[in-house]
Structure formats: structure tokens, C-alpha cells
Length: 487
Picture 1: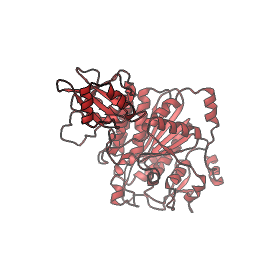
Picture 2: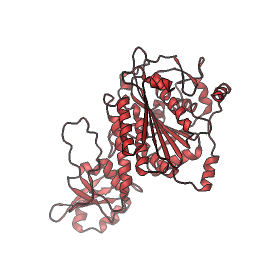
Picture 3: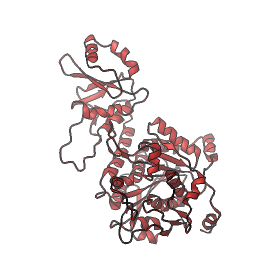
Picture 4: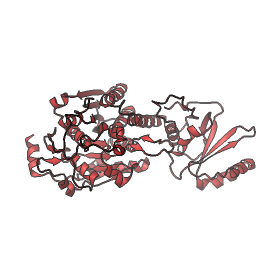
């Protein structure tokens, strides 16, 4: 997708990014003819606006681009499709971050064209700015494109097997190892909830297990891979089911992140776990009030078959703990409640350690890829009580849905584990420059920046702070403690 960024080009037209605060001073230094043209075009350097300046020969001589105050990642994303075909270069005298400018241009060329028969319109090309970090731009643009493509692909072509193939393709490029447990082998190897959710589909459920790296801290990523969610016997209405091809958005996000980590060759031991299923309806579908014994040994009553994501994740999280990783991060398109609270473009973050959560939130701010932390309020654990099992997979209450979902998952994470849970939308509802309507990996840039920093050797003082950070986990109930000790 980066063919519209080139090493060199003859007669490239300069693009001059300008901020409103600097525009008047810049304009005064220009020739009188240019000043008259800019004023006639009513260009005032508003973010995202452009002005094409002609030369004496009538040809395009320069492009003016209004950009945001401070950092700006997206204004340049409109240019590849909006400028006349040809080659352009970033004005070397511009006060603009070259890497961010190139990143915006790269993402402005993203298109999901798998099912389009007509030829794509030509894109304006950008000569790579000398100061740009090409590797970082390529890494993040490729990771975002991978995640978007997977999410936007219809479920007819993106079932559990196809998602598995995508994981294997990424693993092959980076020489990672992949193990795949399919169908009834899930029962034989004790992944009962993954099997239970996916067994009603004609497309066999599976657990994908990728491993890479042999030095550094252990990081385990877990992604919800529900390739399509009908809701099961608690069937969704048509308007709610329509976008359910995106219900593997957590898996796509985690796979994109894993690809970026491996591409950067970060010094860590990476594990990626993706339970991939289709939640369908047939004679052997799970039923409301069924009870299943999970991989961890806890029994779960099925309060709602449409709360299937947490069921497949709970077995994957129990498996994640087997390696005793330094950090577990899971991502899922889990609850509508998180969207009600935070909207569609800001994932909800739950975490057991304040220092880890704050580090990710800070990266979200710096990368303009924000998340918002929500509480693991232990008082709400009672809303998941079951009369016949250790826990119910959902609350009968209509309140605190994102929190109770996170509390359910926390039951399958060991006390003291450094764990972060991300509840995301995985879909752009509207199109903006570089961010078309369709699948989206919200938080990927923030997560990559966080992991790149987290994987570095920590100063002793920082290590002590993180080690002392409290784990905000509700105290386990005595019967559950007893069962866990026996296991």
C-alpha cells in the first residue's frame, strides 16, 4: 500500500504545511502575485485546507496545506487522493514533523479494494522526506492496513480458518512458530468454552498460538476472534447483527500489533493467542442457563449466548497464565456499554496495575491514539453471581456492562498478574482523511509505542516503582481460592 511513497522524482512539487498562527508571517514574505492568489482563494491555513499555487508558466508550483497546531498526523492524509496526479515533496523549510507527514500520506493511500472491479484512481506520490523514519512509517502503516483488511473482509471469506491462515502468513514472514488446535481437539486439550461457542458453526473453532523471540520480558497478547456473531440462540436483531463481521476486531488488533513488534525486532518474548470461532445457531448450539467447566476449573452459567466473546477469552487467558508472562494484554470488541460510555473511537482500558495503565495512557496521548481507563470496581462482582455455578457470563442488570465484562475476565487472571484489557469498537462509522469507514485498529499506535518502551531495560528506580504498583483486583472468594489451590 506504500507505492505512492517513492525514493525520488523529477520536478516534484513542494508541499508547504502551515499553521494558522504562522500563516500571516509566511504570506508577507511571498511575492506579490502569490499573495494575491492566496487571498483570492481565501486560503487561511485552516487544518486540512489546501491551496494550489501556479507558477509563471501556469503549471502547479506549490501546494499550501493547513495543519493543526502542535503535532499533526492526518492533514496530509487527504492529499494523495485530492491532489493532481504527479510527484510531491515536503518543503524542507516547513515546520512540520517529517515522519508524521509521511505517515499521514501513507494512510491516505489506504483502500480496501478486494471486491472492486474497476481500476483504482491514481494517487499523488510523495518523495520520502529525508528526515522521516521510513521504517516506523512502513511498520505502522502495514500493521494498520493488515488489521483493517481483516476486519473489513466479509465473514464469508474471513472465518476461523481464514483468520488462522492470516496468523500463519504473518508468522512465516517473521519466522515465528504457530500451533493450531482445531475442532474437537479443543475438548481433548481442555479448551471447553472455545469449543462450546464455536461448535454450532459448520466452520470449526480453533485456538491459534504464535510464539516469537527468545530474550527479554514475556509479553502475551490475546485477541477475541469471533469471525461472525449471530448472538447464538439469544439471536441478535438485524440492525445489531449487520456489522458482526467486525467481531474479530480484537484479534485483528493484536495480530497487527504482533506484526509490528516482530518487524521492529523488539527484545521480548512474544506470545499471541487468538481463539477463533463463529457464534452460530444449530441443534448443538449452547443454550441459555447451560453450565460449562472452563480451562481454569471454574464453572460458568450461560446467562446470555450473545456474551460469547468473554467465554472464548476466558480459556485463552487461563492458557496465557501458564507461561507466567510479565504482562498480558487482551483486546476485544466486547461490549456495547463501552461504546455508550466512550463513543466509538476511544477504547476502554481496564488494568490491574496503575503504573502500567498510566504508561499506556500517556502513549495514547502522545500518539493521538487515545484510550480511557475505566475501573475494575470489585463491588460489581456480585452482579455476576450465579445460583448454580461459580460465575455467570453476564449480569442481569443493564448497568455497568463494560465493567462486569472486565470483572468476568479478571476471574481467569491470577492475582498479582500485570494485565490490561481493551474493549474496542474496531470500526470507523464515518470516513475521514486516512481513516475510511470500515475496520479500524484503534489503539494500535499507542500500544506499539508502549510495548517498544516497555521492552527496553528499565532503570532500577523505574523497575521498583512498577514492582510496587498495587494490583487492583477484587479479593477472591473463599470457595474459589480453595479450588484454585487444589489445581
